[in-house]
Image 1 (cartoon, rainbow, N blue to C red):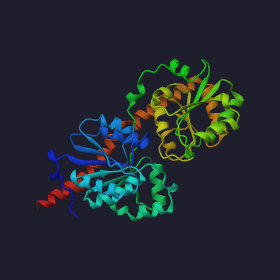
Image 2 (cartoon, rainbow, N blue to C red):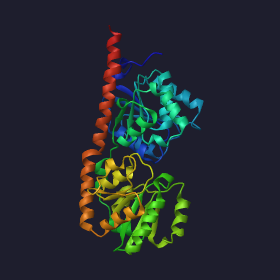
Image 3 (cartoon, helix red, strand yellow):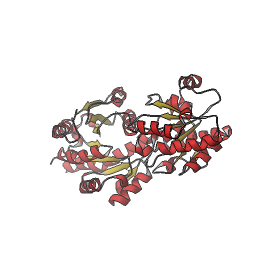
Amino acid sequence: MKLNSLDSSPNNRINMVQLIYELDFGGTEKTLATLVRGLDKGKYNITVCCIAPLGPVAEEIKKVHDMSIISLNAPGRYSLFAFFKLWRLLKKHKTHLLQSYLYYDNFISRIIGKIAGVPIIINGQRHLSYLDSPLRHFLDRLLSSRRDLIIANSNATKRSLVLTENIPENQIKVIYSGKDPAIFDKQVNITEIRKKFGFKNKELIVGILAKLREEKNHKLFLETAVEISKEMNNVKFFIVGGGPFHKYVFELVNKLNIQDKIIFAGDQKDIVSMLAIFDVSVLTSISDSFPGAVLESMAMSKPVVATPVGGVPEMIVHGETGFLGETKEELAKAIIVLLKNPKLRKQMGMAGRERFEKYFTVDKMVKEYEKVYDSYIEKKLKCQNQKSFT
């Protein structure tokens, strides 16, 4: 199997393929779009490859100059024709570096990438691996030698891999997801947004920004709402996001008899406008490796109250940028403290924004990815080129 060498690229740019299964709205997809926008196009010749038909995030990627995006239009996850198309793409582009993000595209990258002679294969890990099935663990270990590195999105994600799959720590690099601070600095007509969703002038808003899925645990959010409502009458609870658990959440609202306290926004593209009207941002997940909603709330200078799962404690400094709590009583107590103290809300929100700017910006994320890419280019490609001339 012949590896693609550095001299196969015009202007000695690194031929890079960023591989992902789909480009629907989601944290990983948005991170990919943010990353490719920031990567140095003078160093990297970038192609984004989507295995499934292109989704809505593709439109954002198409706006990035000097790079291309392609779909394999796979009819399903295990399409042999799609595998062949990926192999042909990697060969045609004389790919030097293949980066993937989620379990399925990681799995495919290790098989097709190696067959296509890609010298550098880097996988992503964006969930806690202890939730995976034994079969997934087996396949992951079986193909582990076919990748060069795993990039995890939190230390919690890294620990999960080490403990569940016995992966050596030096084969995992942690790079936090990053956001562009400028996106969160735009002017929002708060009065207009509040009016649009039916909030009265003096009502305080406790919001949750999360897909309606099992792991986001909206049940705990609603039970917390009940606890808060026992003590405070001027609070509404704003649920932003859609998903498969919509019917369950809606029925639970009726069962808890808090219909007059809950407002559903459904899926929203303009997340900044939604977060702008939050007084307190809440996340009640059972499992989360590095939730984008917490990051976005911090960028919007909102205090965050959340469950201490996965990478959340790496984001929120308890008592400084927000509070961590596990039960409805703990969460309600923390939220009530914030609702009754506007000065504390502002103080914690500003501290959250400062922490965001220090650790979680897109510039920092892109620089960390480029460091990883360049170290493997130096180690594997340039070394390979030198050997070919000796």
